Length: 456
Image (cartoon, rainbow, N blue to C red; front, side):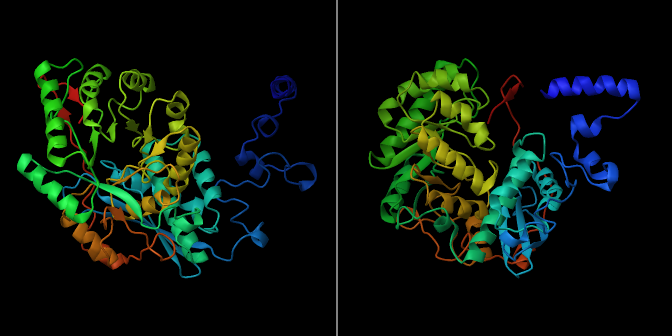
């Protein structure tokens, strides 16, 4: 046993004054810097390891790799407005073959941290073969030692998307085909946000939806904040607002309701019970995501499908929800969870447990297009979000300016699939210069009437 070896060695070291780092801790630093008798290098776990490179980067396995190598990585902070709390963080990987890959590492309220973390992974990718997507994901996640939260998760996401983009371009195929898709030749079903302020606008929204073939919308309950135990007036107002939306949109359009974790399990349980007759597609983030048992309490009291997951990182972060059967739909975000690789793994885990996927998407166009590629190959996919209205706004027009086509805009209720290799687009650095990075800005800070901190 290693424990016995350690204790025995420690006793010997105390007697002989010999260091034990090589034998007991097996740290790569010692393995690199200290030799064995005869000048040979140690042959243990970390033999030949280096703090900054791997055998894959040093040419030891070139015989089974492609000839393409990553030569540079660039990070771009892009602010559509100077005060934006979610500047886009784009990642560009360049190669010796002249092929480039793009990804997105946008993290709301933490753009500077995400950009810095992407650059921290520079040594992981420069000189590497971009075809080895899984290897790079494992290395970034595991060799970071401290398991990923949203900052590391977003950085890995951006690099991973760019690697998949390269992989598709090198092999001459769209990413969704590399993943085994498409499953539906019509494209990927999606939904817009209602963005309606009154019944008149809701009726107009329905007319536009019918004309354009849009079959689903997302909204939220009325009420800026909710106390842990809320008044009947506040709860009734939230219920009535959702009843009005169903009345205006009619029975044929699906409606999803995002609670944005503003409600406690007690308040959420009351509301979801009352709105069951509305036949909602799902209710989302009924309480803060860090308490799975609290979510389970709500699930036991409702027959409406429950969705959550946009704040979860890696497939490991979803394991407890899946094992406990707490949710019906997972909504991991491709820009935070760990990129295409992580969304694909979450989808596979969920499918094996009878859970569906409806990925979150409220950042930039690169992450959105990456998500569509995964959606198209997931058998348990339900519907794809885009945080836009049924009419394109300024941000959508900028996306079209950058990419040359109306990215993340539906045709007959579905996001069309591109036949182009990789993620299906090209982007120039010059196009981004018009929107320089405005710095990191905090997300909204919302408070209850008594000044205490509230979810928003």
